[in-house]
Image 1: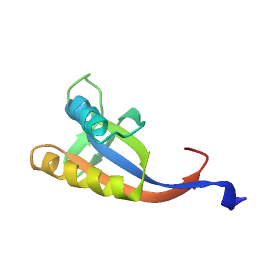
Image 2: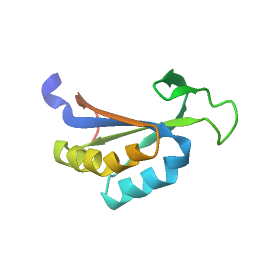
Image 3: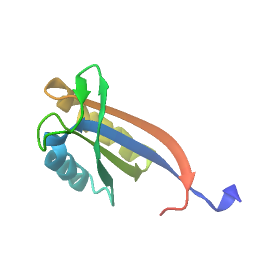
Image 4: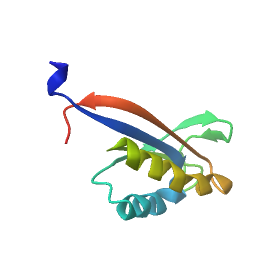
Length: 99
């Protein structure tokens, strides 16, 4: 059955909610065809992000499925954001039902 599945690269971005519009604009510039964005809560090296006050101390999680080459471009374009904002990015090779 795995032969009928599509392979791709899942890029997950977790960062401050204030970056939302900039991240979406970046995806548009890179011609990413789609993404999923959800509020995120948790704790890490930048402290706790509980999302208890809208727009303050909140994070988002953004996921997109792209080619390996596009994931490289996206990760390179995201590096400057780390200079001024809490942001982590990781990618995984995946296969599934998507186009």
